[in-house]
Amino acid sequence: MTEAVLFDFNGVLVDDEAQHYEALQRVLADEDITVTREDYYAHYLGLDDRTGFFEAYRRAQRTLTTELLKILVSKKSQVYLKLVATSLRMVPGATEFVHDAAKRYRLGIVSGALRGEIDHVLSQTGFADRFEVIVAADDVSMSKPNPASYLAAHKLFSLKAPVDAGGCVVIEDSLPGLAAARGAGMPCIMLATSHPARALEGHGAARVWDSFLGHSAGELAAL
Image (cartoon, rainbow, N blue to C red):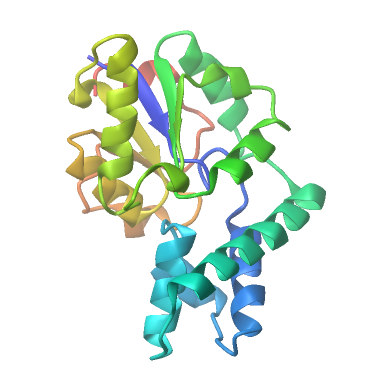
């Protein structure tokens, strides 16, 4: 039976993938690397910034040093925070779903975003206090599609009270996120906020939802 729910952040709780794309595109443009919107959703969605910049440099057949990587990640975060300062919005139905889920399960966030970005955005919402654990890109050496972040969240839950990995339901919007959840032994619901539902089928998700609207947290009980 479901005991806990782990939410991805960008594209699941916060409707900000467009801002992440624009921030990445601006920073890479300064490095003479072009990333189109199609490129972003096909190759970068669900990756943390470190992996995303490595991927961009690999595709451009250029070398990325550790020092430059740190600079690029910092620049992107600064641009992202400026963008969401004027255009922050939640995924439709996310706020209501979180409040409903908090009455039934333990909640957590597992994201490839930086902790500072998560904390900043959560402070603008009405449900920051609903989450028992948060695992950000800063907290693990390898982010999605590696299962390390979901395994870390499971460990944090278990430090307070035991919970079975199979009793943790994940809600994701990206295929790297789905791979990470499955690698951690957790059932995953895919939310069609960033890809059409048909593109998410056939990859091992427990369910594919068009959106939170029309669904309740009670549906997670038997997954």
